[in-house]
Amino acid sequence: MAIHEWRGIGSSDKRASRQVDWGYRELLEDDVPAAVAAVRAAMPHTRLLLGGHSLGGQIASLYVGLHPRDIDGLLLVASGAPYWRQFPQGRALWLAYAVAPWLARAVGHLPGRKIGFGGNEARQLIDDWARTGRTGRYAAVGVHADIEAALGRLSLPILAMRMRDDWFVPRDSLSWLLGKMPRSASTSFEIAAAELGDAKADHFGWMKSPEAVVSRVVRWLDAHNASPGT
Image 1 (cartoon, rainbow, N blue to C red):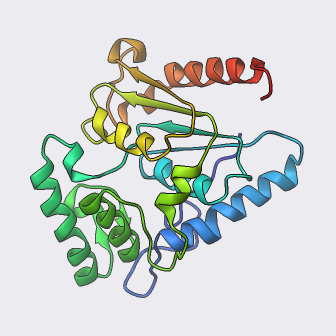
Image 2: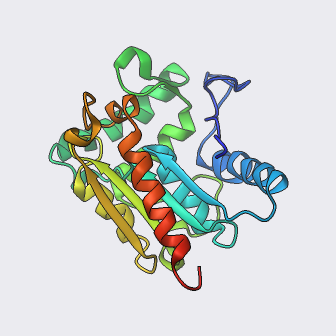
């Protein structure tokens, strides 16, 4: 396993600010390709599957759609499209998607730690994310390829795991994301709190007891590796 650290956190030398900004383009054209190249250099003959949690799962999906020959499978954990119509509190979300880019531009970045949503996020990243939230379609400033069409052409195995009590990713949100990749063979699981021991089956709680997620991934990989022609 290789862990790709998100731009703007941890050991990253960048922090979102009025002087430092990035969006989906930088993630899709700079960061993820660098990670994929590093893994390929270290393990050139290994099948490569790309996965992510939440927005990371969306970025993984977009990258695989744009580079289908680079990746052999897609893993999604607590990830789905943010389209407002797929959420019970949709109208309030639409307003949030309208306000968040404005706030990010006014402050210089989205002050997520202060408002209680996410971290301190870059302006363009929030603008790209909020556009999908309002329209239901993926596009990014500076990315000239048709992302939606690329997802529609994608054909590879997908494992998607949703947490039953995750209001950030209701069932319809995951379905909307998977629906953009109709030619891909997707396997979906919903994980309940009973499988996680003391952890909550929500957007972040499963990380405290990830064994259930890991076992699902391992079983799926075993079955996929055993299938003829894979």
